[in-house]
Length: 152
Image (cartoon, rainbow, N blue to C red; front, side, top):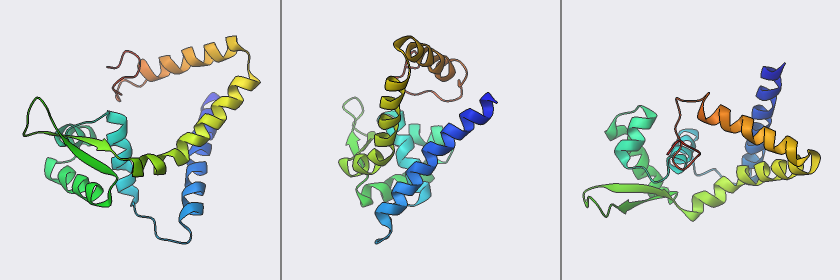
């Protein structure tokens, strides 16, 4: 039962995102491919990775990662920032253009969070937060997000 409910919530978030993408792009071609969307979302979640860090995380070759990054730079969704420590290295950052695109999904998550806060007591919300922290930090060790809990 818990597995089914969790999967349903996850699926609803995905489907809402897809609905909004199709609604916004029904009169024009979308500028990001599915694979590019996965790449730029990963770059954002990794918090300014280098091309090599991005490649390592995605388990792809550095040349393949560089090709994908250059396409995203050309489309204006990410930019390369020269490292202060090692001038040969560049960190990847998402642009405002991507943040505007990404807000399609974050706005709905915020709306659902507001509904949670209205529907449940502060104690229930605190317990949900505690449970989600355990899931994120202990039960999903394969994925580390910079700046999230003890996963720094």
